[in-house]
Length: 222
Image (cartoon, rainbow, N blue to C red; front, side, top):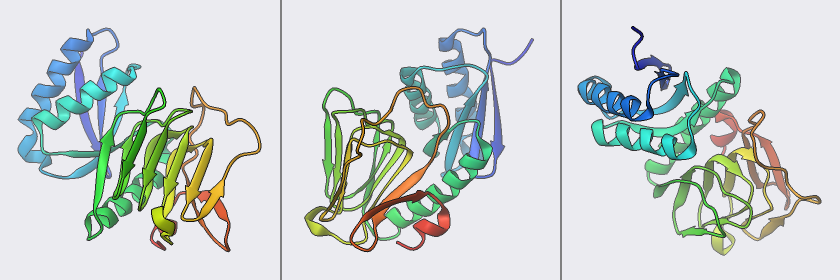
């Protein structure tokens, strides 16, 4: 009989393989049990998480993250998919970003997606564990990092702060503002089913907001 849940590790992350035909509640209980048993082994590491073997809804994803949080000391910084080259780049960049946030500059996490014209505002740098849908906005006096799709609005570097940036796993914003500089696409952004992720970072260069592929080396320049 195949196991309901199989946990494997990879560089900077953990992979959870879940049985396709096993009831989700059984999957959740098994995840809670296995992470509780391995609590001392994993320690307080910060890792990326990969979910494999079956499709999960956004709600199920959140419940899995909660089960891990309640039964271990792990800090899950992002959820990755199957595009290994993209994931490796993104994981490295995020590892640097997290170190930057907690290495002196205050930062915080927000778990969940922004929907129905929700607005999230903070004086700190912020990492959003979810999507920002059209009509919604993330506003930070420092930096904005979205571990999902940016389909709404994002504002970084409040009060004209220089050197701020906005990063997202899928960058299709309605509008962004960094410091005193604004960007609005000429056509309606496309959003919905993510075919292939393109992690990007937006920042100000020569008095203009530019977009580049998100890499560790690029982030280290901020």
